[in-house]
Length: 157
Image (cartoon, rainbow, N blue to C red; front, side, top):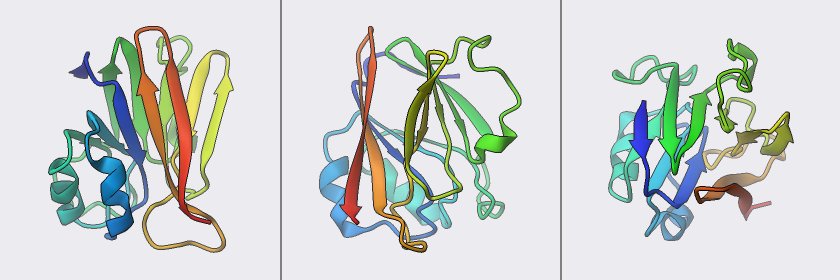
């Protein structure tokens, strides 16, 4: 498990598919941690993101050629357990039983922030190449010891 007890400002990205848009740079400056829900597309994306903040990323279905990425990761941020997985349908544990506060996924490119049984489910959408008519977006989350406040940010509608 990765532990980030002092990370307050976290950016959650997904499905970059080899494209790190210049418009994203201003949103990455000064963040404490970047979570990536898979489909980086190229190892260079990981290297570029690490110039802004520490990165925890999982392997997506297009990332088999990128070594060192796991299918899932568990991260502790300000005392909250966050579970990363690319495809939410592949979740093989009960987040409530596992005391997970937030599950981060990707794959669908469809942004989602919802709470079910005291667990936050977050899909940041995609900041990579536009898919269909979905927005180009990501999530910014503010962490404190008492709460997690995720907010969807749309770069382009």
